[in-house]
Amino acid sequence: MHKKSRIYTATITLLCAVFIFASPNMLAAMGPSPWAAPQIEQAISLGLVPELLQSDYQSPITREDFCRLLYHVLFGQETEITLEQDNPFTDVDDPQIRYLAQRGIVSGHGNGIFSPQDGLTRQQAAVLLTNAARDFGRDLARDMSFMFQSPMSDRAGFAPWAADSIAWVRRASIMAGTKANKFDPQGRYTREQAIITMLRFFDVVIGQKDYRNFQNYVVSLAPLTIENDVFSMSIPANVPYYRNIEQKTLEYCDWVQEASGLSFLPKGKQYSKITIINSGDGAPLGGEDGIEIQDMDYIFHDHTHPDFVYLHELSHTLQWRAAFIDCRPFQEAFAILNSAKVAKKQGMDFLYRYLMSFNYAFIEPETERAIISSDFETYYRTSKSDWDVYLVGFRFGVYLEERYGDDIFAKIIQNYGAKVGALKTSRDQFVDFLKNQTSQNVFQDFVDWYWDNKSIFAEKDEPEQQAGTVNCLPVINKHFKNYTQYRNIKFQTSVTIDFRDSHALAQMHGYTVNGISATIGTKGRITVAAFDKDGKQIGKITMNADENQKVTFKDAVTLVVIGTNGHLFFNPDFETNYSK
Image (cartoon, rainbow, N blue to C red):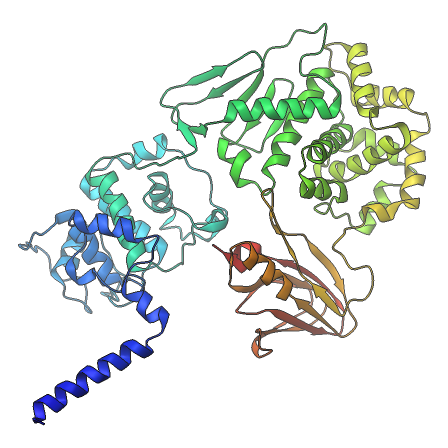
């Protein structure tokens, strides 16, 4: 055989072997991810992607390639570049990058360093895009005043020089957040992510299009009020609101009325409609005039328990409209317990269990002893601590219903409303009325009952005895996707925290398992070791006494905690452990 033929044959054989033995990940990285493919195809068809970047879509994009992509979007196929300044960089001489620097779009790291082959963080990309939009003549100030935005939960981690840029790219829907309402400023960008971002940038900046895609929302372009016989809704200009807000509100109004035995429009009283107001600041607040919300997204999507938020605040509104009761312990007890009744009746089993076990309200023993004491009535009359009134209000409410019947709240509210009319009265006046409706000894009776029945308020996820193994399970249903709280895990010398069943459950629901991520706090020095499904140790950390730390172990299925104090706090992070 000819020498060249042998070489050719050997080369073909080697290439075949490479393709045969290439991993699926290697092969997948050659093309775009399925979710990205249509948009990448669109970007290429529009001439936005230079040929040298039309491959390796799933690999991280370098700073150099991102700038080439940005130049291509801004200036197309222009080849003549007039450079009027000396090269500001010592480690790159690309004319496109130098031109972007000349226009003030790119600045590098300082001291002449550009680091062309470094990866690009999300916040660096946001700054480059903002600089480019400003250079193109985009009115960024107008965008910031016009467009809707809810706050990111990780905004404290934004670099000061990037915060305004992050705000703009999000408001313009050029760069979205990641899961758990985060922007992830230090996250890395892949080529396919960068190309899709450039497609949005092209539409918004070059094409002057409004790229907002609120599939479930209507965006109000002028101050708007929607009304019917039950409620009104006031929406400021340029704020998106949930398309089915009217239907949803009417449905929830029916639920809370039915559960409570009360009416939003009591006989003999004249009321304006219930008002849904976009307040623009603060948390939701139910009141006599209706319910204020920070934004429409908050009720339906962003809160951990959106159904509870709406049911809770409408219950507050119901109570206010039936009687002007200014006593937070009573108001909170009514709102929580009425929401639980709704949840039970509507088949929201987890929400019902969540509220009735009150897992999210941990009360320290010293606080508990100080409040639920012989002086409890004074506390009830004077307390202004929101957290404390949630705790004792709920517990006192459970007692009232057990002692005086499930309709005790409705009776008190109706009778008090008939007594005071539309006049607001003091907390002392209401407490005296409460005693007349129940018993003059109702507060002391509650204290005695509480200490005899304290176990019903124990957190369901806190092991009461020494634990050798804790099986960590998430709750995954249409109402709630997270873990219940694991607090105060007690052990002698070690405890195993097992996620194998948790991972299996998540996979059954279509999630990809990433590993174990959790916040751990310890009162003594501990060592935390992580193990994979084969029992191989894949990571280990040591924590000192009184330390609180977020830990992440990729591919882990169990943690073993070893220590001498035998006490730790453990709270796993569902959003990090699993993804779709």
